[in-house]
Image (cartoon, rainbow, N blue to C red; front, side, top):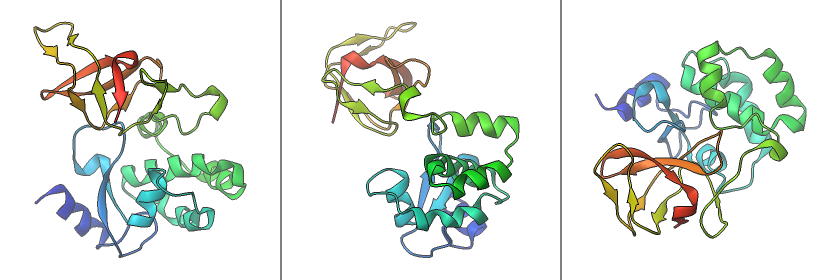
Amino acid sequence: MSVLQTLQERSKNTCELCASTEGLTQYILPPSLNENVDNSILVCKTCLDQIEGHVEMDVNHWRCLNDSMWNEHVAVQILSWRMLQRLRHEGWPKDLLDMMYLDDDALVLARATGEHEDEANKIIHRDSNGVVLEAGDSVVLIKDLKVKGSSMVAKQGTAVRNIRLDHENAEYIEGKVDGQNIVIITKFVKKT
């Protein structure tokens, strides 16, 4: 059974955040690169667009987190925590965060994207042109790069999709080149 089919079965074909049945799709929690049931959830288009920042956050839509934060699946709990962190300045999400419990391992994963950090304290990744990079973006290498520890050379013009950000160093991103995960210095990439 595929990951998507497993998610559909476990959620009874509803969004695991808001319980909508329209426009459902699989969402892999960043910074995960591997697709599996433990790091994926089923979300509707409305939730997905707001999670990925394609549309402005509708605060009232996210009142559904009051229920989803208690979901038995850790991936749903983690994404609920991240969304509550984004909305914490609204008041009611802070109350929910105070009630919510994540075990230590889940909390480490939840914090991996930096949602809990204030904007002033967040590390900002920028490409060679100064454009802000975000997890999941696609970039292109602007010069040939020798990959340390291997004989591989990542060629100029190579597209790297679905990048991950290093949340401790603004100069490092991670992505797959020729099927191999590598660390890339941001000054050698251009956002596409």
